[in-house]
Image (cartoon, rainbow, N blue to C red):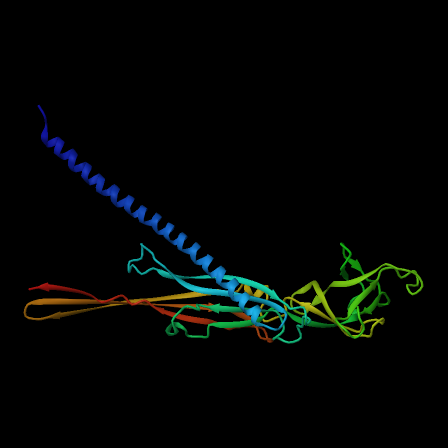
Length: 328
């Protein structure tokens, strides 16, 4: 004899189990879909920002008459949907990429003596955002290198990199150094290192080369190799008296300060619900307001130590008013 009550109980139990499985699997599926959606959008945004940074660097370099490096970093606060967000609004993330182009027409020499001529890095924030979101200016430009003047007496007993010598060379004393200029009164003055002081180089050939870099104690970042830029005091054929080294860390931005760049995000959301009643129905209206503040913290050195020069943007994402009407 068939027990129909037992069959009915089994069927009800299976239905309950199926509902639990659908709920669990559905949540997991939404999580996976959200991850794939964000990954795809992040890749597309990254490619877009990367190409835009390169195009902007090319444009700046082409429009500049100064031979120098043009570095542009484009930063965009883009919106990502989030299926798990209870407001179904998602949030914004900062996508950034840098492009670097060096432009020169070979008719003028490099000059790092002024900030205008020194290598710079320009930040471009949210160039496509509406004006209402811009709390601060879009573009910020900072120097990334500067000339470091030093007396030539620092050369002896330091590790030097000569242009044609693969290993560091130690200069014993200043008698091994001479100011060299390819053409008198034309072009940059360099330092010629005489590598053999036991003979008279005026009478017979002695090995020599041009000083490229020198290791010394820089004022900001300790001991490092710095590129010799020019001899600022010294006549051709004589010992140099003052040198100018190119310090790639002496600008407003350096690698230590760039590691401190962060983005602080603040999300503010609230909803307003109103209820109206007339003789025939109840009408309720809900309005959701959302505002995201993106604060890009930029650390620079203004000459007196690290300071903040932040860029702030506020994005409003209002949802349309939702209305429900219930008859009495």
